[in-house]
Length: 187
Image (cartoon, rainbow, N blue to C red):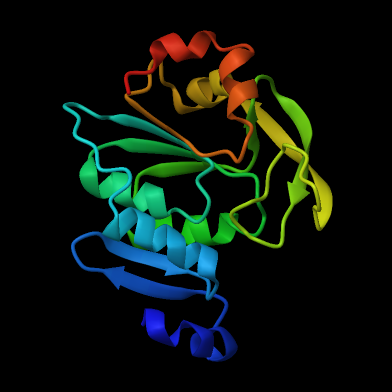
């Protein structure tokens, strides 16, 4: 499959569903970024975790759902809140959730210290879209911004068992401003 990726980019539909043995079905686009995510997650096991009772997971920067599928398999009883601002990624993320029957809610927004709107700097690489200004963005769009307090409130949660953050450089702002919610995170 990986050796035929250039051919597939020319001939394939906008997404392909890869059945990862033992993990589930993962929709990917025929681009190198999505395929690197597959490799990081299912070959390199970069998020290999062990946790006792993980019931509530927040996936910040959920991208196309590769980490969501991975964490669902590690903790199948957990409910997952996925936060993703990119209009390129959201349909693929929702497909990954549906294909695997994951109990998840998608927040179509950027995560931030407060609720509102924020500029999202678009990149030609689908995994590099960020609210942090980039040197050569291919465009800028306004997107909703949601706070962790609002995510927790809308999920009906008073604590988070597992938090995954991959928000392309916006981590510092999230973790240093309006961060009382951090005391409610287990891992």
